[in-house]
Length: 235
Image 1 (tube, rainbow, N blue to C red):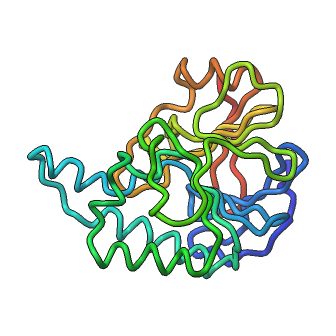
Image 2 (image 1 turned 45 degrees about the vertical axis):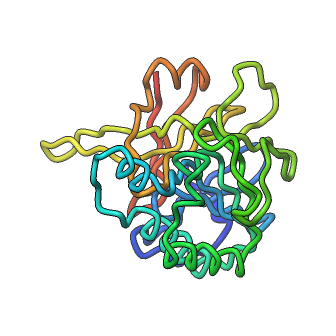
């Protein structure tokens, strides 16, 4: 099926825009793990896990302390590329609720630069449900926008069209004699689960039982490729 051409976004990694529809709205996958939503001029990302490196450092496991800078720089670049006016961050935005207090001055400066350019709506997740107001932007447990429900973790009994994160879906593909693994979006008729955006995030197989229990029959994994949208049936 030919993807719907809805928004012309210069994508360096993906020459052909990976466009699709969900819940009566048009979306474009950008930079593999983010969505551009033209109707409200918004970027959607999930599971940034900012300050994950500093969380591990406090517990004696030293990781390179650049994850938050890398994640925020990617977000700023996507805002510049798309002209988005809003960012919806769908939960686990910080690795823990104390994360904002551990931000180094240069990291906080990156976040402040982002807040100066866009309206940032933080949907809280299981890692950062007590996110402090001082982080900036708007902090919400969930929200509705253009008829769609935005939350961190998909609700099993939800009947509306819902966008969420939490599961970090990824897909393994056999190609040219080798197997590659990429983050992916999982779409069904009423659910769209986003991959993790953060620099220090792993993933769960898109056809894992926990994800399939939510997405149900007829669900598919969506990725961006050189020719546009790639679709892989799940289950």
